[in-house]
Length: 137
Image 1 (cartoon, helix red, strand yellow):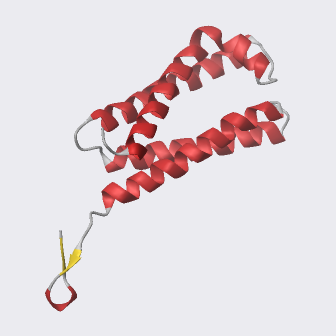
Image 2 (image 1 turned 120 degrees about the vertical axis):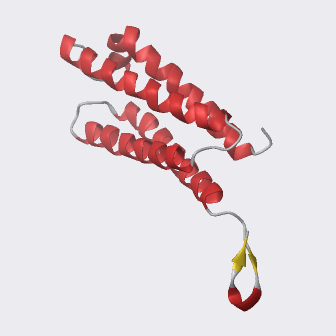
């Protein structure tokens, strides 16, 4: 993998899978670290979020490891990360999470920005001007 941005996103995708998987058995302690309630309901919801992190992160990892990543997967993964930023930020504003959770939120926001940059890069191939203003790949 020669593209540094793609390599960074691949590492982030793997981290997403691992942290999502950790939320399943260790949801209670993680919720406490984030300053949230540790109840059966919050552990269940946190585990459900973790399962989706495994699925979306795994899909992103899979496409990044392919020879030609899917622009659609990159786009939707970026939207998921942007949504996670918003959801965690709202959780902090509403007192569901402590301000420590903002580290997670801003990591997701940074990841979303990187995904959108990479998505745009592979979605719009380099073109050169042709005759009469036409472009050729």
